[in-house]
Image 1 (cartoon, chains in turn brown, cyan, green, red):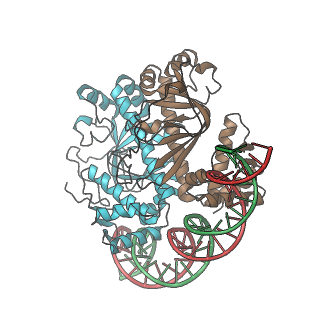
Image 2 (cartoon, chains in turn yellow, green, red, brown; image 1 turned 90 degrees about the vertical axis):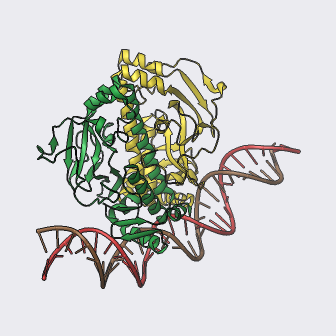
Image 3 (cartoon, helix red, strand yellow; image 1 turned 135 degrees about the horizontal axis):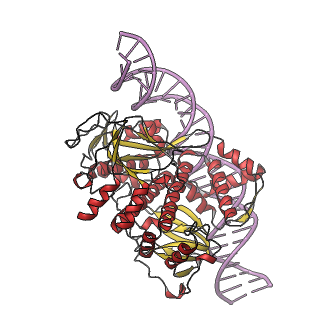
Amino acid sequence: MNTTVSFTTSPLPLPTAPRQVPLRNVTKIRTNCSNCSLRNLCLPCGLKGRDMARAEEVVYTRKRVNRGESLYRTGDPFLSLYAIRNGFFKSTLTLADGRDQVTAFHMRGEMLGMDGIGAGAHESTAIALEDSEVCVMPYGLLQQLSRDIPELQNQFHKVMSRELVREHGVMMLLGSMRTNERVAAFLLNLAKRLGACGYSSKQFQLCMTRREIGSYLGLQLETVSRAFSQFQENGFLSVQQRQIGILDVNGLQTALGKR
Amino acid sequence: MNTTVSFTTSPLPLPTAPRQVPLRNVTKIRTNCSNCSLRNLCLPCGLKGRDMARAEEVVYTRKRVNRGESLYRTGDPFLSLYAIRNGFFKSTLTLADGRDQVTAFHMRGEMLGMDGIGAGAHESTAIALEDSEVCVMPYGLLQQLSRDIPELQNQFHKVMSRELVREHGVMMLLGSMRTNERVAAFLLNLAKRLGACGYSSKQFQLCMTRREIGSYLGLQLETVSRAFSQFQENGFLSVQQRQIGILDVNGLQTALGKR
DNA sequence: CGTCAATTTGACACGCGTCAACTAATGTGG
DNA sequence: CCACATTAGTTGACGCGTGTCAAATTGACG
């Protein structure tokens, strides 16, 4: 906490007692990264043969998290990082006065929990937006293995660095863009990431509410709704509740550049 | 050096390092972390005896960066991380349409450049806001050493993690706070960090313009100026151009919680 | 001393927040 | 399966907080 963190009076709010991991949700099946469909997206990306085999040691459990449940909460002791095997999460932070904000949406292949390393306790709260499954990677084990496997060390550093870059993107979004730009950027980014996972990037179902999108984008839910409606009028989108169809990528992209 | 520090004048005298003419800004003098006044703020924080001595190997050059000059620019190949030994930097990002935004202000003891690891090229541009000096830490060397020194590995991960947490703070600021809250949070945070470095946290000289502050806070420069004026009317601050006096910390802190 | 950048302050406009009403979807219990 | 409650989403009206534009002042620098 000695860097530039807390803008609130109390450093790290610890509102709830740390929740223990319920055992029933932990699968003791040895996971196999080599065969995992996410091996080129996830941490072991780029590892070869022997290294990949060894890296698997770091993932020795999976955990199911049902919709609405938390993977960890602010203040929980930091023990592990998590790779999303399936599903969707949001990360949230709460200010001292109770206002909270969504700081990220995470999908399969992405890593969670890195903000806990610095203080030894999770800073944010991660909540599943749909029934999900994560690979649990005990941090101590990861550290140990990455000493032996330089390429794993490198991959891990890259993952953290890319998370920094991702957050820069959110900062640009919040600091320099207007409503329609933010919403367009959000949708294009989501579409791209869905495409990278093998899903359709033209047609998808949002798993978050307008309020959650607004919280992430620094907007009110009504403003998000209006932006969707406007894009629909422009013929850029088809919107039916949470079912989104992207009809005109270029249109959205030019909406991004408009002041 | 005493409590009041001027950020706009030349760097603070370094009793240990005679100001000889540097070879193209790179000093080939071996740096000594053990004796550095920042050893408890900087990367080797927490390292003991032997480890500290070995960790010094990673810092084998210093570099001077004069006011207005860049340490690196977007797209520059990523080779090293930097620890600020003295001075002040801003990090900026530029969108495709030319809009740019300050994403961070960095002061002595803080690390720069981590956003370059992921892509192998620097994502942001780092510009000195006053004549500054940094310790250059070649990334390859750091990686190699941190395999041998677990505590160094751990410290490095913590530094990156704290940077993530810091950015979360900015996201909260940009997404959930109003003008006066943002400005109050900015000032309190700056004061705290100055205090942590041994400077006065009540009386200091800003080394950035209103425009740069505004860019960082997602506000127009006029709005920042008005917030300063208002805090002055409230008796929270004394403002004379860039000379800031914090008269009422509690006042500022309650301004933080007000919607 | 003149020039230019930085800052302050005022006037005004408008984008977005706020409040409210309505509709659509989802879930729940009988 | 229906009746009902609850939550999510849409749309309109209105006002406030900031952005925008402009002008004056101060300070920095050659």
